[in-house]
Length: 226
Ligand code: HEM
Ligand code: HEM
Image (cartoon, rainbow, N blue to C red; front, side, top):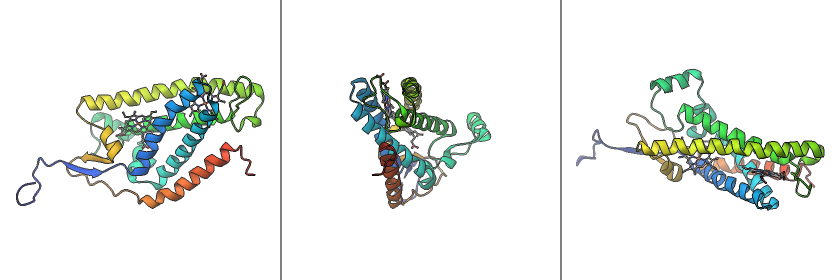
């Protein structure tokens, strides 16, 4: 700003882009995936399951937030159709805040594979059937073992997607665009002329969190409510 308070052409404008629930969900998931892996590898299956149920709750929350959350968290805002993607690749898409069309689909892929991973885990039966998933009584032992194999394999698909995610973020960093700070603080630099839409009110996360926790609890107890 100059002495008169007017903004010069070089002024950098920052705005809140990521809301707290989206950021908290992101960092909790990023923490719990390595924890899940470590717990499974070191035979701490109760911890593995607990971490998995928490991820399940976070995924249900993220699903609800994808419809009821801030514009940058809404699926319809960041899942572009073929024309949107083509325009983005040609460099012809309008300036925006939030995920770009390619990033949006990579987010969707990570969340879907993670949800499938949790879904398979729920039906998985371990080798000696001592610590099976809570829904494994709906399948035979052999099916539960086959599902556990898929659960092992899909983990590496998830790892590949996360590696791609981190590579893309590092590539942006290389080109002097820091995406990580906004995911921590919520604030990002916005291009001139772009007015970010307001974030969703925080209270809205409460009923969403309640529904998500209840859903995870019911599933973790194998749908047995008493
Ligand atoms: C287990 C590991 C991780 C998973 C599964 C994961 C997954 C995701 C997902 C699903 C989103 C979309 C957020 C949303 O709209 O809800 C996202 C965004 C993001 N993540 Fe991660 N993440 C992981 C680790 C990390 C790490 C370690 C970093 C930082 C070094 C990071 C940095 C970011 C950033 C900067 C964004 C925003 C990207 C953008 O501006 O479009 N993530 N991540
Ligand atoms: C509610 C959620 C989950 C349940 C109930 C669950 C259940 C299980 C069970 C019963 C096993 C043992 C299978 C066997 O011994 O063959 C297992 C293994 C494994 N799980 Fe999960 N899981 C869940 C979520 C997750 C998540 C979120 C991840 C990672 C993101 C994950 C990654 C793994 C891996 C990598 C193994 C294999 C470890 C090894 O190679 O020994 N699981 N899980």
